[in-house]
Image (cartoon, rainbow, N blue to C red; front, side, top):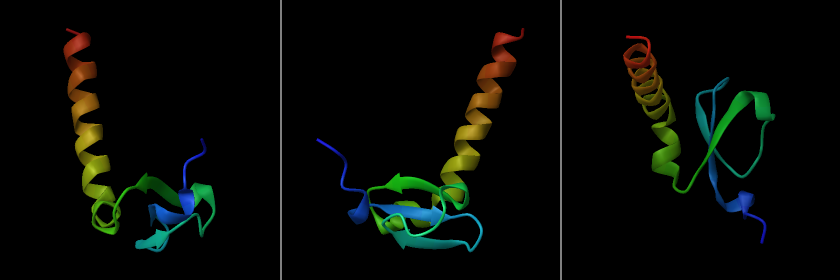
Length: 62
């Protein structure tokens, strides 16, 4: 069964706004997120994931 993307939330990187459904171009948005609040904190989640992956990469290089 396909995901119901119209009732999920996306963070628009260009405008800094949360959108319900796939409103803007894919290049401008990240998601989906199950709630508006999670989408609003998308940048924090992306930064945390990036830091985690960088630390994992550094540990592998040792």
